[in-house]
Image: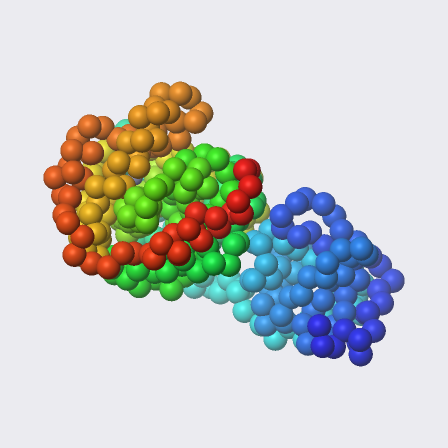
Length: 370
Ligand SMILES: [Zn+2]
């Protein structure tokens, strides 16, 4: 906030409009051009965008539309005043850095063709043959964009409140990092969060986004129970199961999104990401993710059995009861529990979290009921 007092708000004769990317409300704002761009709505909390993070978005003539790489993917700032627009653009050195190069366009067209081929294969042969081949080949940058778009939709479905209790967050990060390291996933872009909803589930989105829903955390009685399920989700990430599901279930949306060049701008993505969250992975994918989870837990000197017991408690109590049966995408048969039980080992590694860290994690969403 250092420069706020020395910089007068930039005056504009035409209104500047801001969409925060979370709600669809149009906000009339003023801008302050300090050490960062400050977006001020009367009576609201100012939003700061670092100049280096600001990118040009597609817009009609006479309007400068900006996005910010550090803001929610749908956040947009619309400047209609030409003088103000040129003041702002003069400060944004990386404004056009993301503009699709000739090579970039070739890549998008290439992947669109590939997605189309995949759809044709699904239609003609009725098997996700192409999806199986394609999923591991999708470029990381594309995967990440799809993950960003899916995250917006997931938060629409499950509520936007990411649990932020600082001690709980630190414990969660520690747990996820230990699993990630043991899994050999060297992806720096991997993120994990707890969403405040009573649904007992966990899932992974393309681009390395792992979500645990509070309902699952509430039912977990030890770090090992939660860790095994997270490890299973890392398995789906490692095997690109979510991309495979997306190409197979949401291939059309995938194609449409790519053709429009702005995945987040396409309402088709709603369909695509619903199919992600509700994805039924194949039995083979589930078994492979279980194998992966068993290996990670063993590598950490911990047993995979508690995770199976947690899943069993959830599906056992709520199995078959419609909407609450969220773990339907991860059906736990007696076989799976039996397998995890066979892989049970006495602990040979240190606990994944201390008691204190575990208690903090359990309270990451606050102590109140949702
Ligand atoms: Zn699974």
